[in-house]
Amino acid sequence: MTLSGTARNSSSLISWISSGKIQQTVANCVEVSGIGLHSGKVSTVRIVPERAGEGRYFKFCTKNVIIQASTDYYAKKESPLCTTLCKDGLSISTVEHLLSALESTGVDNCRLEIETSHTHDPSFEVPILDGSAREWVEAIEKAGLKAALDRNGKSCEKLAPVLTEPVTVWKHDSFIAAFPYSKVKITYGIDFPQAPEIGCQWFSSTCLDKDFFSKELASARTFCIYEQVEQLRKSGLIKGGSAKNAIVCSESRGWLNPPLRFTNEPCRHKVLDLIGDLSLLAHGGNQGLPVAHIIVYKGGHALHADFASCLSRIN
Image 1 (spheres, helix red, strand yellow):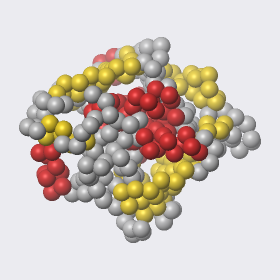
Image 2 (cartoon, one colour):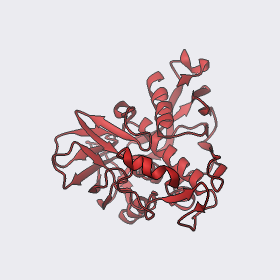
Image 3 (tube, rainbow, N blue to C red):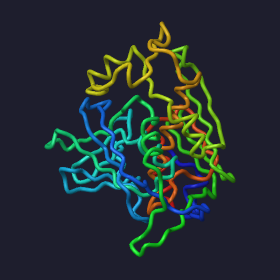
Image 4 (cartoon, rainbow, N blue to C red):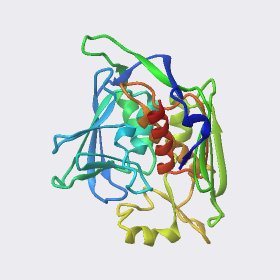
């Protein structure tokens, strides 16, 4: 990973300015259970209202440890197929779809309680559900939102990170380039020449509000190449994976469990992942997604998190 020269010497890559909104939390508790994509273990996640300024954090019901949803706890050496947070010997993986839903629906502050029957296991995983963020969004919308109040009973303004200089991170032929822009704009490209039914796809939008996310991104499911499944399982991954929580594409036979929800569903899912991974830039109940034009080509969780970490570290 390389950071572009423009940003290397910068100490003010991001400016935090008012978004014109107040910080929010869920109006009622949300509880969702399901199987983990990689662990194959069943867990329950509860989204609990939290005070303004507390941000989003994970609390383990059987452990006295809290992990903030922050770049400070991103586990770089974990699986490249998901985003994992670690602290004090505990880890929580596959957090990206949940965090994407929280960031996009405006749940700025919440306690994320996670519980599993494997009480002695130091590794936890957020349920994969149907492979998208749709069920998280539906559960949050059902619970509703309310203004988050601080310890003094007052609301707090929500700040947004605004990119002030161009920055680029890249690894091999994959890159993320971000440029100052008046709003959040994401342009994302993927390329899977070994699977012609996926091939090269692009998605771009400046309309990334709650309604757009719910209609155009939340239901885009994770995907995999059928010919890679056996090797992934031999590596101890996707133990809970199935045609019910992912769309599967064969290199020679195309999609094995159609229909797709969008013609470019794989690319839309990558955008969903990006929003969740960049939400790790958030702190204190503020916005995580940078106000910038973010262009990604052949990205993944590791590159997304490296980009978020760079912005956080430099600033």
